[in-house]
Structures are given as structure tokens and as C-alpha cells.
Image (cartoon, rainbow, N blue to C red; front, side):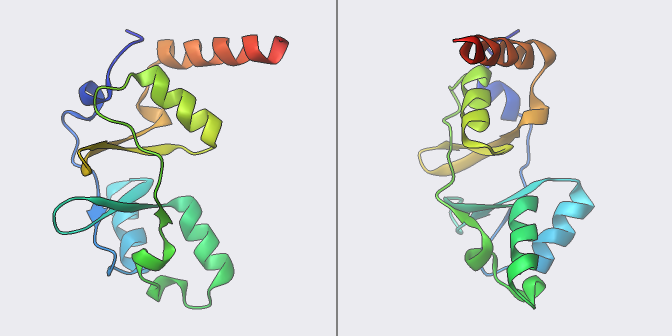
Length: 139
């Protein structure tokens, strides 16, 4: 099926969320323990404030002597691209490819519903994206 919606993909998810006061070290330990590539940084009501990924961790390590003690609110990517639950899988893949990122929060009315990564998508969806990319490269 190539037209799955984000709500189908995130239906059974429990994304890793943390508050902006948490440290980068705490976030990295949780990401490692849960085998997640990203943490969604939220307020108490579940509103998305930002995202912290492995790429953010590398950036922190490269620029801060005490990176593990930084707060997520300082280290996160603010205002990440998001998609509503009704968006299609191919739309999410297009946005991730065009933006050069692998994780995208799914948000409904400002509240986190889940997160998708490139690895969540099936072969047919990825094949369709590769086919579209090939067409654009030939033009």
C-alpha cells in the first residue's frame, strides 16, 4: 500500500518525549536504551517545542566541552518540520528527502501524535519516491 496515512503509521507508537530541562546526556542515554534516533521535546501539555536527534548530539559534542550537561532546550532543533496525522506516507518521505532529515514529528493541533522516520516506510513507498527522484533528475 503506497498511500498510508501518518495516523496508520503512528497509531501504536509511544514516541520518546522529554522536557526542555532534561540534559543532552539523559536524552542520549534514553535514545540508546530505547533504540530511538530522536527525542521529541515537549511541554507539560504535549506541545512540540523541538526535536533532538543523533545529528544534534554530534553537533553538541563538536561545539561544547560539556555537551552532556547542556539542556535539551538549548541543543534541540527548534520548529522542526511536522506533518498532520492525515498526511500520506509519500508526502512525508518527500518532505524528509527535500529537507535532508530522517525524522519528522506527527502533530495534531500542536500536540505530538507520534514520529516517523525513513525506516518506518515500506518498500513500495520508498520505490515510488526513488522513481519520482529519478524522473526529476532526468529533466
